[in-house]
Amino acid sequence: MFHGTITEELTSHKEWSHYNENIIEDQKDFVLVKFNGLHLKSMEGFQSYISLRVCIFSNNFITDIHPLQSCIKLVKLDLHGNQIKSLPESKFWSGLKNLKLLYLHDNGFAKLRNVCVLSACPSLIALTMFDCPVSLKKGYRHVLVNGIWPLKALDHHVISDEEIIQNWHLPERFKAYNHRLFFNFCPSLKKGSTYEDEIGNIKYITSKINEILSHNSPVLIVQRWIRGFLVRKKMSHLFLHKKHQEKITNKCETKWIYIQKGFEDKLYKDLFLQPGTNKTEKLSHWKYGKKKLWVNFH
Image 1 (cartoon, rainbow, N blue to C red):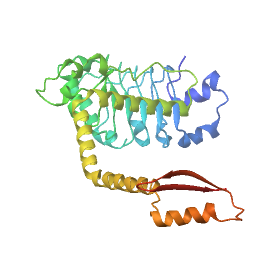
Image 2: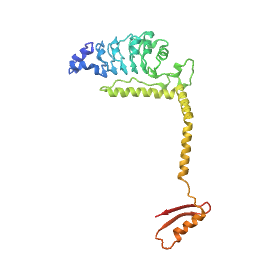
Image 3: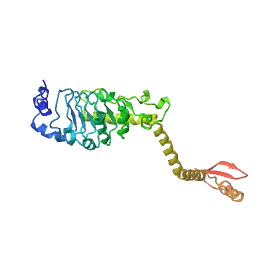
């Protein structure tokens, strides 16, 4: 049996009978909600979740997601396995400035024009829309990849430079859909995962996508080499100055003591030939020519 709305589910479901009105009033402080497979058909009440950062609302009967408009702090939004057929207008998505991961696969999207509103999402990195009717449309991937500028991964594959730059034919290693670009960034949900687990997973997915791109994007590889060259060129005078300083320091540390022969003979007589001296000295090394002298006093 399902009750249709979040509030009814929280107050009526036997597993959550401990929920009371005070907890429901505190919804504005929630940072994570996970309503997976509860047969909910409405997101009524989500207007109060103003602090929400992770929303997992998968495998329900949702058709309208407009109540999420006030959740401007969202970083991850999982709506897969619902009955959504259309998305809100661009204004809705432009307000979600922190949204990075969006899971919309296994829904009822059929019109390519409708999903193009996601281009207003300023930070969207990864998106899934496979198993939707729109994913069968010709040019579906091309339109989304070139329409959503910050997007880096779509439907299990990181985006190739070949998909962005028109008529650029790359070697097999850099081609679209190759195995090096494959990444399943929507793994199955884990029971009992906490907010910290979800944030850690978001960071892992983001860093993994960036790592794959850094090794398989010719544009990024060339940019990295050019930046390295420019930095080395700009900093070369500092490295040369430092190297010169180290050379002078090493020279000073290994400097010999040169003693002229006349002074050397006098020093020898004063130290070793004077009678009655009670000092003990040891001459460790004595060499004529270019006179080098070490004298250790004990």
